[in-house]
Length: 89
Image 1 (cartoon, rainbow, N blue to C red):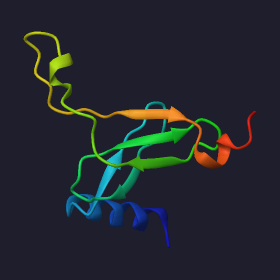
Image 2: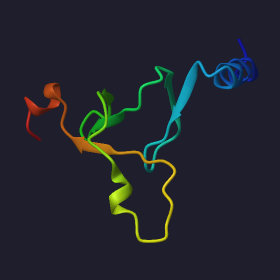
Image 3: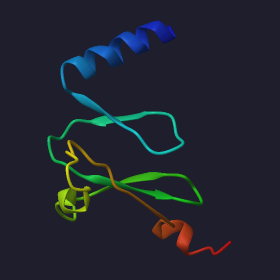
């Protein structure tokens, strides 16, 4: 299978809403299955794995400066996953 085929299939999945992009600062875009539930992510600083977090901690609109309009947000937590936390650096 060629890379062009992979990108066409990914584009189709995106267009159909079956996958969504996950953008983490300083990283290439990742994709995950669309679940229709707003959620955030945790990235392990050691192994670099990314884990889905359930839900959202709240309404961030109160943090937006007066006169600004927020239309989206993404929260990424960083630390060590349970596996890496067992083996301190």
